[in-house]
Image (cartoon, rainbow, N blue to C red; front, side, top):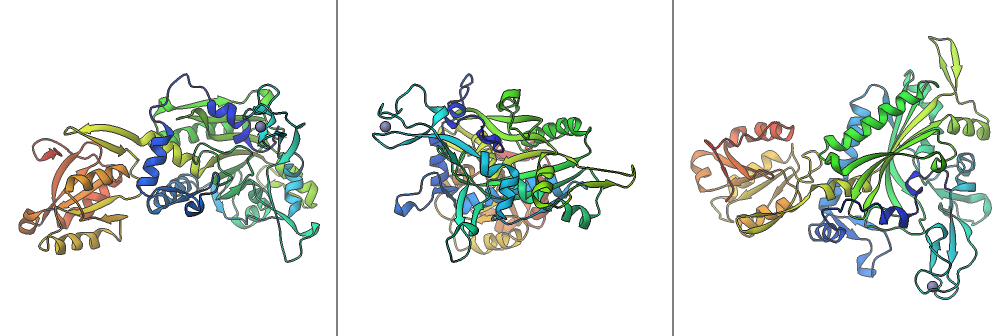
Length: 469
Ligand SMILES: [Zn+2]
């Protein structure tokens, strides 16, 4: 079994056929197609025919992805006094991976078909033959999931380095640096967001499992003996985070790892699972890693890695609680949960009910038509808003078509400038989910949008609001 990679405790095939006791409400093809159509996510190197399981984030996707990172960082680092951030290098001293156990045991058993030469994860193959052609399979051999490359101009053993398979080790090896320079007391968390790489045998399900992905990891160091309550605390925190960002509770569940599936370093572990289109699958793992990592790195580096508690006058090696999530995987869950198709005025509308903080575009400025009389005021409104909110300007096609385009990428508010606006200096704000519209003075527009984006209710009382027809 792989030691570190909780995400792969279940073989992809086993986990992704998943538990389909509850059918998902949208299939993955619809999500993939929306992502392509609206510039969220493209297949990588598409003009060359693509590269397996690699994806590029387009103009809307890059905004969405930044927002996922930012809301995580804000809730984990900025809104807490007991967590600091870190950004470590992707390539690290090879000794790191010996100490962490990745060189020896970050492996999957691999078998190859002797006729068609397709490779399979041995534990995902049922029966004796190749699942594709029925051909004879080789004996399993252990396949290391780390990407190997060479540092420096001469390709020799001494210069072999790995692309990190997780960001956590960069945190452990900097434990002492952070403790001595931050002057913080335990419990203390160190958080990092960055790219990780795993040479998965069977990636798939769009951006769910890819060989290059982005990790959001927190290593929360605590006094031994308090670790179990901190694990409970973080399991709840992390579960609630998804709910706060709009994921429906019934599409989330917690699963505690059985003793037989715990990685060797882990004392306990929970998965937050989400009902993806392919079934219930892991969204995030929260593990109690004990003192395994600090002890291993102390042993292999020769440097002492412990904490002196001045108040208690004692020295100990902290335990660590690790909530480990993926940017891409969270983003997929947010997309799937936000996706909706409904009928408005006899026409189909596809809408992403994304949380305001996640929406790629916050406000779209839409002049009623591309009319030279409307353009100056519309541009003025755009220029006023764009320093404060990610704002789009669109004056092509009919207003209805433009509303639909904004709905598809989850824009919470559209601001419409019409001929009346020229007279009364008022514009219409239209809200994505309720389709309610209110008219407000241009002067107050920025202030009102700011309040609405922070969560103030959109007052759609019928006396002064209308609903888009
Ligand atoms: Zn075969």
